[in-house]
Image 1: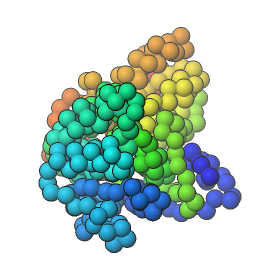
Image 2: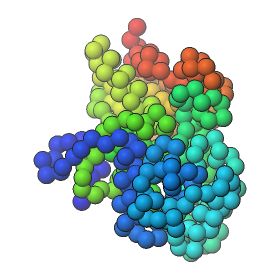
Image 3: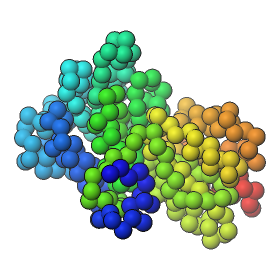
Length: 342
């Protein structure tokens, strides 16, 4: 049974659901896939005995042993390269990089090797490789541990890019990523690990490339992902009190991008706001805006608004950190501007 939306699990009387933390949903996905396929194994710093810094891999060592849950040295380039090599020869590694900032150390392995190998082999070779990492601001971890670098991977042909916002999506998409024969960059957000959501007991997989409508609306389309989804939902609730109905689209996977769902919403509402935590310059929001302009320009009743992080390294100070990324009021103000509401 494949379920693709949270709405369907909440409205189906035959599906038993429970509330899980985001990190628990990820742990369950890893456990289920490791039980299902002996070729799946995990590599990363502190993921075995410690269960990972964010407790995503807790207790997996106990069940699967040190040959499948591997604590690595602090040498990101070497163990990522080992993971890519293992994928090329038929294994299904899930490699964890503690902070997305540290992926700068593995760009050759990901960009020049994993992303290109299928193409350069004439389509004969597969690279079923998953890179898990987390990014975004939170808890004053400062400039080297708080970046949102998804646009760097979005730019690279040959990579798939996943950024789930809920426990339900996190589990279903991670299972799909592990089963995918292409390299997948799977980015989580540090502030989502303790968020709760409905997850069915029965197995399900969410196909990569399917957006989800987190909220139906008619006055404006709000496109967001990762930790900007909870903030967008809160903004939509406040706007509803003022009579403004917002539709929220979560792409869930940025590559492949479900452009059809986005365009259908844009054609309905005729007003668009795109929200990203990453800095505005060179961001994915700008590319999505260009795709909307190219495919649905005649439907737009106002210029597209982009709400994004400031073009600055993330400050350590908590107040400055908060000021550097989109907040709920900024999203509300942007929706009002496109809807011409004072």
